[in-house]
Image (cartoon, rainbow, N blue to C red):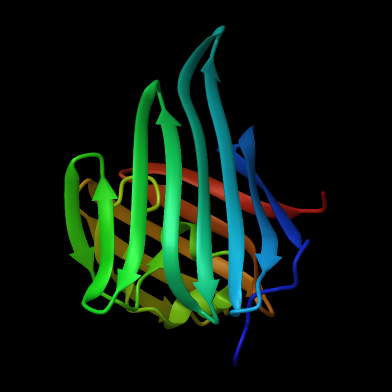
Length: 191
């Protein structure tokens, strides 16, 4: 498989639910394919949880990833979570995937994908994952379930993230994601 990523202009949209409440959207856009075989993928997630008349939780996350085939070459992300801003930069080098979160820097394994990558089934081939919101990296534990879904688990420094995901061909149809005891559902919708 030389380039499992979709053509330029393809956009995937997901509703995000907390219980039965619609709390936001996630959008993945394939922005470009260049002559070198690089694919630029833009991610955008906006969430807002309200309790009565106030906002209990707010997230605005945007990332841009550059891929060559299905090798993550770089990631840049900006996340505003409950008023706290986090900037992540990552680049593939000969000795691994170099990540910078503000003044902190570390190296993740070369074969990593980002946490924003799991909209495409090919991400299941990776052995490690970089959290696009925090920059943490972790080994990716995965298992195909009897019902056709995938169970994923990553133990990051900030906590464990688990997911059950279902794909239709190459693309995610829905997912249940639990991060530190807070569960949400993602359901693919037409734009």
